[in-house]
View 1 (cartoon, rainbow, N blue to C red):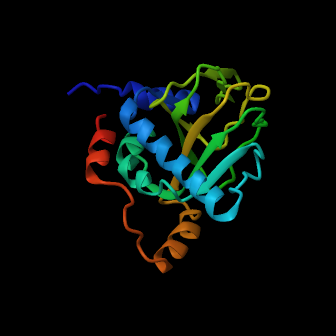
View 2: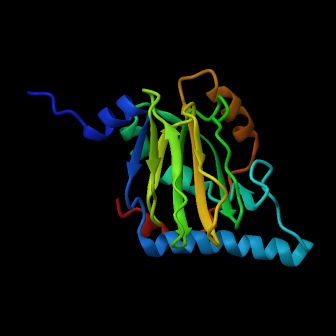
Length: 210
């Protein structure tokens, strides 16, 4: 039987990144963005302020809010990266505000594979820039529901200060489950109670459209 190459796997292997258009539907993306904004508003109401991101001060940020997505899309991501079994590490999310700046950076060593999903944006373009495995700078424009899968070792950033009103990005991070790094994740996770899903099954079904 002739070998049929997988274009997604070959693209990710060659470039170190892969755009996944419409990973989730527009309605689901909106629901994700609204759930994060509700958390921001709740923190503002309860504390008089909300959590500011240390890397991007002009952004609200939240750890763990979307942990249930780590497993939801894990199999699809494993397929795209060539069948590597992945260990979920963490989820993170930001709501970028006017004037936000995302400087060039690479993810820390534990975050070997990352997925960034655009959950909401306005009409102001603020594309992600990254250097692929060949060193070439590429520009990635995302619409709501689009995701970008990338190697965490790639340099990535956004050009200039954000000139729009609001943009919501969700980040899912993984490492190779066979890597010694995975033990840094598994031991603490095993000691924590398993959280209950915060989202109804109907929403998860919409997210599973791909």
